[in-house]
Each structure stands twice: as C-alpha cells, then as structure tokens.
Image (tube, rainbow, N blue to C red; front, side):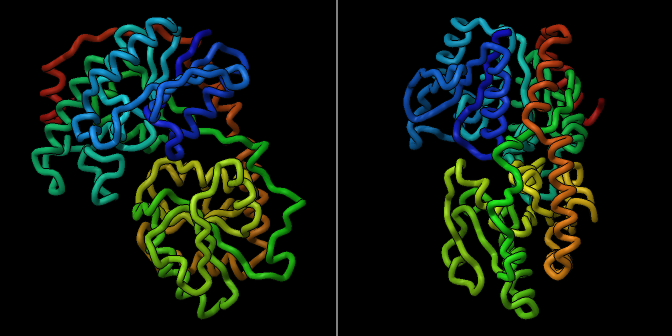
Length: 405
C-alpha cells in the first residue's frame, strides 16, 4: 500500500512525534512518504521511508490567514500527491501556520484520514481560552474571548469539513465526543490511541532510582517553550509547599519555562533536550507530574508510564483514559494546588506504592501504548471501508450553526 503521511510542520510537539512514529512503523510493511513543512525543500530516504520537506513561507510572511489558505503551499502539496498517487493520505497537523485548513480539500482527490490531536478543529486556538471552555458545543456563538472571530472561524472550518470527504481519527473518546458537535462528527470517526517506542522508553536497571540510592526524590516536568497551559505555575506552588515538609525533594524541568524558574530552591531547569536523550530524563527521576490545564492524550505521559514512572496528572481531556487512579498514578482536579501537593506528598512518602504504580504503568504501556499496536490499528482502517465524496452542504452548515443536529 502507498501511504502519504502529512505533518504540517516537523519537528513540532507531541503531535509531530506521533505522525513520524506512525509513518516509520507503517514503512516496515508499506511504501510510506512522510511529508512535512520546513524551512527548506528537501527529499531524502531514511531507513526505507521517504521524507519530503516542503518549504513554508518565511515566518514574517505567515500571517493569520496562513492558518486557512496558503495557495502556493497547497499547489505544491497537491502536485507532490499527484506524482505520488498514494492509496491513503493521512493528515496530522495542518494548523500552526503550516499547510493550512484548505489543504484538507485535497481529500477530494485521494482517500484521506485526519488524526485530530487537539481542539483546533473546533476552536480558534488549539487550546481554548479559558482551557476549560467547551463553547464549541454551542457552535461558539457565545464566545467572550474572540466575539465574532470565533463564529467566522467556525463557519469557515465547518464549510471546509463539509466539502472534504475525510475519515477522522481521534486518540481519545473525550475528543471524539467533542467532535460530534462538528461536521467532522458526521463522518467516519475511528478511535486509535497513540503509541510510543516501548523499546526506547523503558525502565532501565542500569539507572538506579535516586531514592533507592538514598538520594533526594526527583520529580520530572516536561513541556514545550513557556507553555502556561501545562500547569508549571501550579506545580511550582505545590512544590514550594512540599519543600517545607520534604526539604530534599527536587524538581527537574525539561523545556524552556519563563525566566526565573530555575532560580527557585530545589528547582533545576535543564532546558530543551534532544529527543534521543529523553529516555534518560525519565529514567533518572522517580515521579512524573503533569498538572496540565488542558490536554488530549499527552505523549509525555505515555512515555513516562512506558519508562516505569508513576504519574500525577490533572483529570482533563483524554488523560483519565490513560491514567488509572490509584493503579498507575493519581488524578487531581485542574488548578487545585492543594490536591496536587497532597498527591505528590503521598507518593513521595510511600516508596512501595510508588514502585508498584511504576511497574503497573509499564504493564499498561506494554498493553496499550506501543507504536506497533497504533500502526496495526491504522492498517485495519486503511484496508477497510470505502471512500465517500460529499458535496458542500450549505444547509447542513447553517443547521449546525443553529445547534440543530
């Protein structure tokens, strides 16, 4: 089977990781071309997979309209697909000023799937403001953050969705439920949980836990550059409370947080880490903490569990589908610093429970989070079903705008 996996910009966040890992795994049995936006044009082979980079407009030229319509990029992308003639086109990221929304219309020429990684298809932003907003259930008619813009955004996206004969893939039941309030919810919707490399992200006997050696317990937090939605502010508040009772506790922050974070007592900021070194970061710590304010199914959470770490996370988005309360970790309410501190203290002071949860997290990862399982699930979808080609249904768009299903 000939498969084209499209990722608007790579490397980019956990979504880009999932796009690349799925393409790589599929390339073991199929002819796969991984197409992504980049700073320059390139075409190369990587261990049996073709990787094509399409040059995006320079950053200063990527205005807001780039999110919706980029004629030059779409023409080049369409030309590439015409030459490839793939059996399947699998979109991942089209936002973030990359291929743009209108690229989805290429699904009229090829059987296409689109994996949704966040709420961008429903909102102006990938993470709504506030993060708890689910106004898309009412077609964003009462948005107070972007009044007017949110409705125009919704109408434009829904029109493109209606005209695009896509099948949809969601990595969580939570996102699938929200997607019902969109034209995308009327298409075939497949649930495929994301997967990670269980061979790279795994416990290692060669790296002993600091607490087993009698050292300080280490918490790990991982996030992108200064992303306030990941909950670092709440974690720092909880950590400051706990340092009074557990003075030796350390917090290791991987990423690029706001200035001054590394100056706090007990906090170590290691900055951006190359992806190939991330397995070491998980193995050197005892507990993974992600008090995110909004998320779908964080890749870092799956990597931590695969590495044998118990996890503490907020009960938002698709996270409860990954973490079992009291079994592989703890779930706390969003923004509740007190609950977060109590959950951390409980696992910090009970190493037996922490170790049991870590072992169970690895078992769950082996059962559910392998990239091989993800690729097999995608193959099943590729090999079944027929391609529909609905025309643009203006009445349906207006009906959705009025909330009628």
